[in-house]
Amino acid sequence: MHDAVVIALGVPLRVGIYHEGLLVESITSDLPASDALPQIFAQLLSRYTFGTLAYAKGPGSFMGIKVAYLFLKTLSIVKGYRFVATDAFFFNEKRPIKAVGKLYFVKNADTIETRAFDEVPQGGFSLPGQIRIDEFDVDTLPFYGIGAVG
Image (cartoon, rainbow, N blue to C red; front, side, top):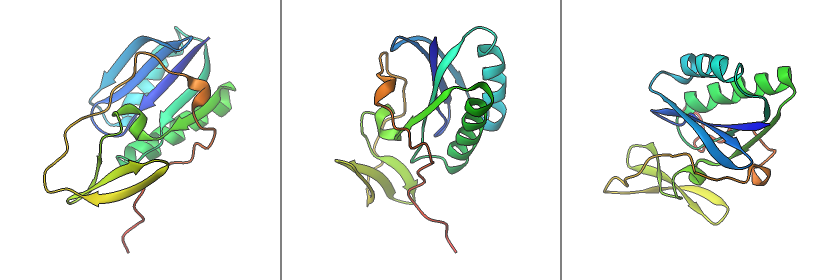
């Protein structure tokens, strides 16, 4: 059995395939998540048997998070895969994540909040070489961090 991890928080979208916690394949795409995920998983499902699907539930690109959640939740129901999630900070060494304007999401212990930065913090998302998928959260609902503007 393999596990698939999806990071759809920005460009590029990343999908990692893990076997016994070790990264065995990494796929990136500059396409929108709605186009990339069906194409990528059409190929992966013909080559791998999955036990767990996981994704970065946010914060990050609202649309990427929504699409990844809906796609992976549906696939997990249809195929009977376990579905888990973790926050985006797991994939960027806990660096600030762009929110809006000069605001960035930061993680302090278990709390995610926004903070203004005058200089843009550098860093992107990456798939770790090794993970412990059993430590991911069964609460898979997306975390957007900022409410809708009305």
